[in-house]
Length: 231
Image (cartoon, rainbow, N blue to C red; front, side):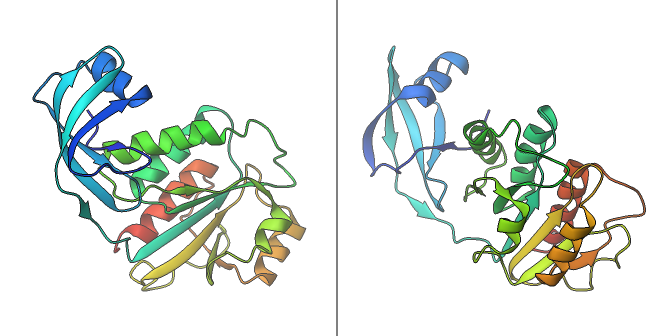
């Protein structure tokens, strides 16, 4: 059972009638009953305890307690990658959320053309994973970009890392620094030479994540985990 459930707007303390997909999930799928306790959250740091008072066919009546606020993490990891195929992309968004990725940047590269972009599905997977791991802040999933548009984007963090098997190891202290950091991971077969040069010219620092050639989702999760380890 999830640790928390996300709503668009956190209700004020008192009685609240919950409908829609979440009410169906709690009442029909999980077979919740009166007296069960849940936690509602808005994905932007605010959450509140709530007790189930009654369960109807189309809505659930909750008694919501006082709200609480959790500040955003000091370390915000941005993860940029060419989405792998099918379930592998789902796996990356789900487990990247559990690790703590703050912003996902899906990319289209010379070796991965637009296919199977599923922003609504990825958002649902991220919300479910955030609920399971009791995360206060939902990750942001940016619209997919072409590689050249991405490296020129004005919202990229100043600290930029490029996963590169030939690069040096992760710099000492990189996982302990507060602030925002961006990790760029290549597609199957790697980035093209022009893309690699474009990234380096845009301030991306090559780092090695290990001695072996890794799948996109493996490198992305490993790198994000290393950067979040001391946050």
